[in-house]
Image 1 (spheres, rainbow, N blue to C red):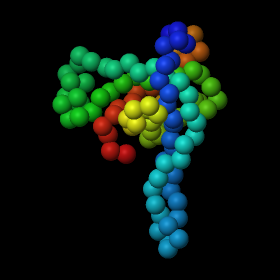
Image 2: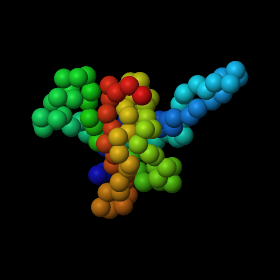
Image 3: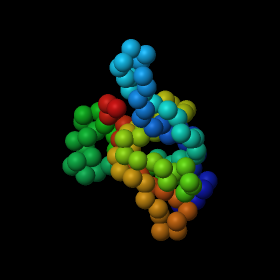
Amino acid sequence: MDAGRLYEKVAFDKPVQQSDGQGGTINGWEQQFECRAHFHLMRGSETVQASRLQGQQPVIVTIRASSDARQIEPGWRIRDVRSGTIYQVKEPPRLTEDRAYFEMLAMSGVAG
């Protein structure tokens, strides 16, 4: 991967629970960090096509390896800052062979 291909700006949000002041909790999101990313839309397999028919789009998201990126967990969300599209992180990030980037499976169109 060439760093020049990281042309999307994304924010990573962690799920949080906050008190509503009346003994209950409110589920929300807290931004952890922003970075540049590359989206590779998955196409072709029957599973991917079925997901797309349900309004979901699986993608592989690539970002630079960093201490921030090591904290990402399934259940976090990725916000495309430019378009506003929300992606749900589906698997922990894994290092590429050259150890310079992280790749992770994410899905748009998923309630979260």
